[in-house]
Length: 197
Length: 160
Image (cartoon, rainbow over all chains, first blue to last red; front, side):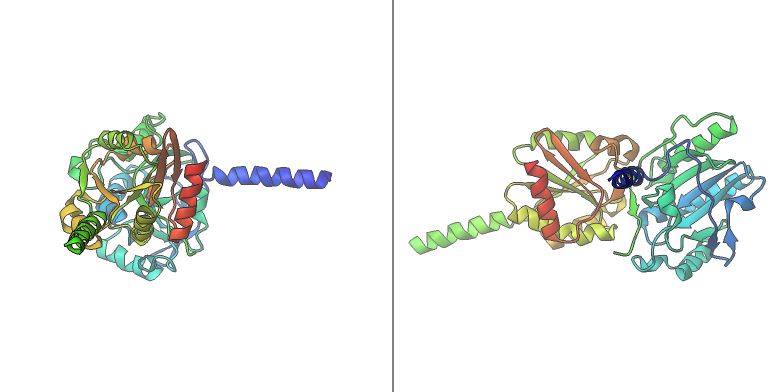
């Protein structure tokens, strides 16, 4: 009976964890070892001198993610020189989203001239830990992998020239000043992460 | 003559009942909020979707069937399409489908401000559905795999 009680308690605790799964600002993010389109494996621990990481869950097929592609390319270039490494991760299962296969990731990266790793979350192990729910979904981490910002790149998906607030860049600017981002969390529309049913 | 009148009434009635609805455009979320407040005679089932969202398009027929068959609710389809695709994709899509559900285009791109007003837990993925029933609200950020699943969910939600 006592054993049963403990087991039930454990189950309840576990369930409560899964229901609030995913990171909040302030949490420590897990590192990963994922394969990029160049065939090599990448981890954040590979970048010893990085001041932080911009982890972008994105993919080939989602029109919303595609709208942000050019901005992601620019961000990667702009912030690499400042010590922030952008890592793009495709979280979709190609069985559910055929356009997001590893082979087609290679094609897209070449077409667009990605200068950053475009990683494949093979087996979909990483995105649930981060709590990514959609593409695009951005996580900004400091050098100790503490989550500093979660959400959108900016406030206008349709028109980069009409953006009023650059959420992600503002958060990086705060980090640069040794401050916490004023807006650590934003919401935006996106495509659900595709899981085979 | 009586037959003729009967047929005329029948034709008129059926043309009304299957008439596709015209697209309503709301520039801001506040306009949608007002619409929700003013349409509270029946529980409102609001589905957020876009023509570019494959799982959304897949479940739309279930929502349309719900609007036609479940007389306890009114279905509103809120499109979050890109502004540039309203004329080229959204309107032709609606024309082809001839839905009886109410189609709305919500142009408000300030998601960070209005998404939490629908539900604070909405991460932003679509499809997502919210049911307003008097002062109660039920929100789900998921798709439905059949009409039966949707209908059961809606019936449970409005009798809670």
